[in-house]
Image (cartoon, rainbow, N blue to C red; front, side):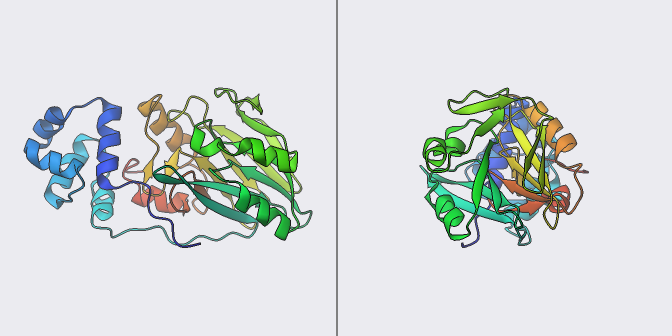
Length: 272
């Protein structure tokens, strides 16, 4: 699979922060000491270093991390982990990730989200002689659960989703519940703000620590605070970025990353 582009540009990040903080363009431009035209140009996708450096502190974004993204000077180091397979499928004008995590000894597997098309996942299960035991959903947004029905029809696996969400075909559970799949142990953490009941799945039993975070955190960004921007920031800091530095993070969009890389390079979490 070719490298997956970063999910968000500087313009996307600035827009998310402005909406989350409920600041309009006039307020941000005045506080940053830049012209309205300069801010508008930045929000239209035109990078200007001085404007970024003026705006970032107003939006509580990490200046150097944001500038590096604007210069296209950072992309996460490639991550591989035995027992993990990523599927990237198109959905309207974007792509979405879904994952299989499996115990190589028993051949038992779990899926995290379904993406827009589960056929690649089904082919992988067959070719690798894996048995799908669980479908764990990070949240109920349509791009992440689009193919739940066919995945269940082909595998018979039960699906689970956090109790703050509601989805036909999935059983609700409270954050803190443990799941098991072969030798894998799956802890669940509430990472809400982008959605009301978003769940991060933290998995032990592979060769290294793994967290499947949905739209809570992206490489160099995060999901928009649709429900609560402040709570999204807080839960991401306390529930994801406190995991061991080597933890592989599997986001709902964009490339894989690690806790260590996001602590340095994610502008939403300066000083983490």
